[in-house]
Amino acid sequence: MRLAFISDVHGNAIALEAVLKDLEEKKVDKVFVLGDLCYRGPEPKRSLELVQSINCQVVKGNADEWVVRGVAEGEVPGQALEMMRQEREWTYSHLSEDDVGYLQALPTEIVTTIEGVKIHVFHATPNSLFEVVVPFAEDDVIQEKLMEREADLYLYGHIHTPYIRFLNGKAVVNLGSVGLPFDGLNQASYSLVDIENGSIQASIVRVKYDLDKVMDTLQTSDYPNKEFLINVWRNGRL
Image 1 (cartoon, rainbow, N blue to C red):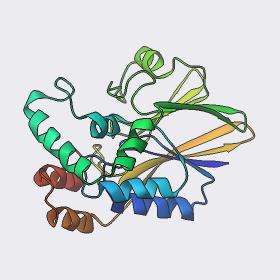
Image 2: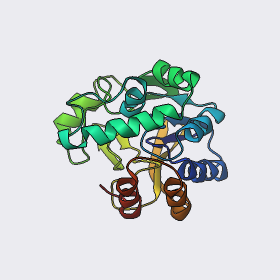
Image 3: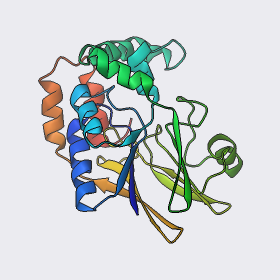
């Protein structure tokens, strides 16, 4: 069984298309999406429609929650709050009531067993859409924040920085970001997991996409924070 886990599309439909093409070429059996579909990119509605078109299981991310109810004070740095609220309003205005209802109704975690392997997926942590667990966190932090439920494989998004760690025979995977990577490589990121006879092989996959086309799409829109996005896309980091 070949599984793909993707996350943090952030309205970058062109990057998502490249990833979906890669999944098709790799003959993936099942896809999971770990949130942050629409907010902070030039094509929120098309990104959502692409996710819905693959008939996969999806969990809610913090950016999906922001689309639904706005960005609250204290959730982002004070100097960024007004701009992020403007970006949220722009995103919200490009979605229908049904789109927003879809985001609102998403679950915050999925626990499933596939070919004898128990898998736990969530956006940031099982108990928070916002908490940050970094790749270099101490083992006890990883165990406390991410591994409270019994599982063989834990996958999450949120930090836009992919990694794989093994603790006490369990695998912890961060997928990175499809549409807005922060690890210095301006390519879409996702995780591929192969399960065979109860054994797990997990990898991080990077996919090139047409960055110039994405920037052209942004420049021809009235998106309120263009320079920020262009700099992140070019450099692959904040």
